[in-house]
Image 1 (cartoon, rainbow, N blue to C red):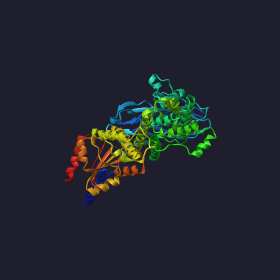
Image 2 (image 1 turned 120 degrees about the horizontal axis):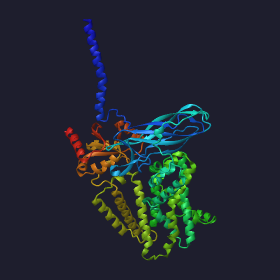
Image 3 (image 1 turned 60 degrees about the vertical axis):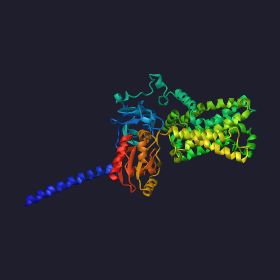
Length: 616
């Protein structure tokens, strides 16, 4: 009898143990479908480091190789990455007596990423090389070098959130008398440390020039990058400013116009050189600085002020007391040109093309104040060539006929362009400016009508100064309509074609509306660097049938482009492993359905059918 009882106890305990172990897993799996379980973001790559020597002598040079294994079906962005994407990047440790030199990243394979277009990526296995120098005073000991690898893994359907992988490499420091030998030669055979390139294309890459020691080529490429940047749209507002500064002075001769132009460009050069030193000193990334809403707002304010001055609302001049003071030290012309040049450098700052992005990233990585100053000096000098040419020959404008107020027409058109550019900068900060844009023929027809009516009412042959108050009001209304119409046209081209959803950009506000109007909620988690997110906007949400169905929902779009306390809280609350993620909930925040990755219009309609049938 006792044996039977013991057997029953044993079976009961065994069954209880199995239930205890399996039940939480089962429950967590079910909860995960509703976004309530724990879903840690899977690591899609691994990294392992190798040294070129089995031991490192004091005062010697050596190399480091980082072999990165990427999970099949996934890829990470190459370095340098396509503009707007997050590059795969090694963060070097800060170790006394150890100096790091060039970092050699492999070339990426070109991949078509939907609406983003072609972009270089890494997949399978890559090897990154690093040069290093050990000082003669390094202590003899064994140590660990702690590295970080920043990356963002994506597949055809989704992009995981940007992540950092930590890994360590052991190093043994020995005296100069102790023998060492080369190791891991097969690994380092895949890295080209400063070897002359085999093709003209490789010779033309800025990253290789910077990392390969070809300093003259690096400076040449940076100079060419500055010239190309001066031809980008966001530099256009500086052209009329340059004309207004130098062309307005009819008495200035050719030589004086040239000197004024050079001083103007020196102002730009000073701004960018200081920027290079600041980046080298702090390691700040220029693109992140320019993404700050306060910085964007300041630039927009400058542009609006310059645009109003082009309309003749007011003149941008130094105070008379300052002008008199400057007259005593050589006149206001050169000082004013230099001051406007420094302002122009700030206005042109968002024009960070691929070359400038590579330069600043390299400066931030090396921390070299010398390179930071002179590379940015060279870049700004290249960008300033256009303004030297414009400033030098702008005096010829005075020789052109002035009948019909053609100069006023030119100034008014430039003013419209400048203020339109200010609105374009603000659209990513002030979301209503982005929200109403559409890519449709009726929208463009309205934009064109506003431009035509605005130009008719705007009295482009006249300036604000010197006309009656009634005419000023009419001119202001006309110019405002012209600016709005131009912004609608330029901004609408970049929007997905088709219907436009009425988005809410705050989670709490979305649920308040849902409770008030008794609607379901769709949370769309997206980021500007997420290709699949763009596909959802351009293909799925733009489908007329899908858009019509989603009009009955409160559609909330949550931006994960930059990490903040809000995004971290939302990531934890909704267990966001990667992007895009779309979650459907009721007004009480009960999860009805969620999916990760891209779905086409037909799949989205099926999901909506499933949700709505379950509610009946």
